[in-house]
Length: 342
Image (cartoon, helix red, strand yellow):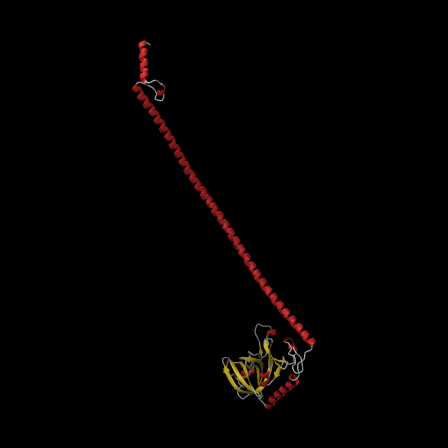
């Protein structure tokens, strides 16, 4: 920031509140508006221009309408104030091209929004809802226009109309030109000066407001994060409870399945045991029957051999036959005994 007589300092936007031009309708000419400097500053969302080092936000023009053009949703009035340049003034197109005089006169200047407290109600006309006597504004009419400056296609400046007043006499027009000259002589020609103490004071206030705003954003972020965390924890609790319920259901199903499996296993075991017992009983019966059959066969064999031995005259048990002399030996011995008379 530089200081000097020819080049007055351009103060930061936090000092604009101290300016004698920022909060008033600045009566300017069309050439003045086209010559304003732009330092890329804003005030409440609207661009701020500078005449010297004076910030200018709202302007007032006086001149005659030389052209009226209507585009989609907008109307453009070309104003000539005899300063050597014309300027375009724009506004939203009305719903009806022509309105009755009674309707225009009876239109309220206070815009009230329902279901809002009085502090939040918007008073007076705005850029989006200007106060314009549509039935009187036409080519050749001298008007006084109040509005805000805006850039159009980066190479042309326009005025967004907020309020239009028709000047019905030359005296009114002359008074408006006198106001332009007086404002230029008493305000714009004198550089705006802010003391270092006031600049530092408003700088600290702006920094404090930024800190509060940043802190509010951080707190909002923390609240949002805590809300998300609590929501996430709730979801996790629900998920854990659902998981626990699923685990319990799985356990109950496993126990039920195990019990059913145990019952089936016991039933199968009983069936197998019964079958094995029956098989054991059958095998025991078969063994006993086999033993009895073998015993009968042996007895029958013995009886048959005994019978065969008796028919042969030996009368010996086949099992003990090996322990006795043969039949021929016994006969020879018997013949000897017979010869001896024994």
